[in-house]
Length: 75
Figure 1 (cartoon, rainbow, N blue to C red):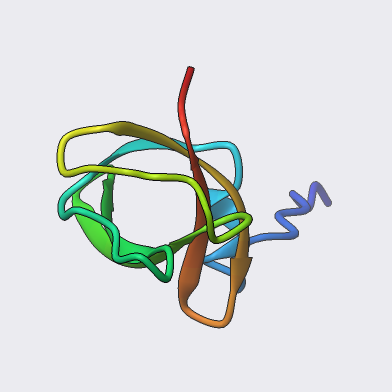
Figure 2: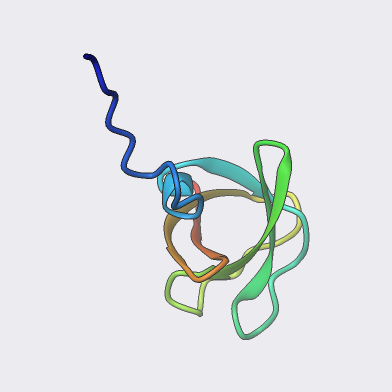
């Protein structure tokens, strides 16, 4: 029997790590905003809370907390 191991199958947020997307809003001064990854829009926070991200900026997902993507601006 061949069984495929998919450790992120039931951890959808974890599967977003390292994905690239685009900000769909300006992030607040508290570092909160929204991003589109694939065809889904997610709530997001900047990784350190201080990076300025504007609507249309490219982002990379660095982590996840609950249902929030932790992101940084992509280079």
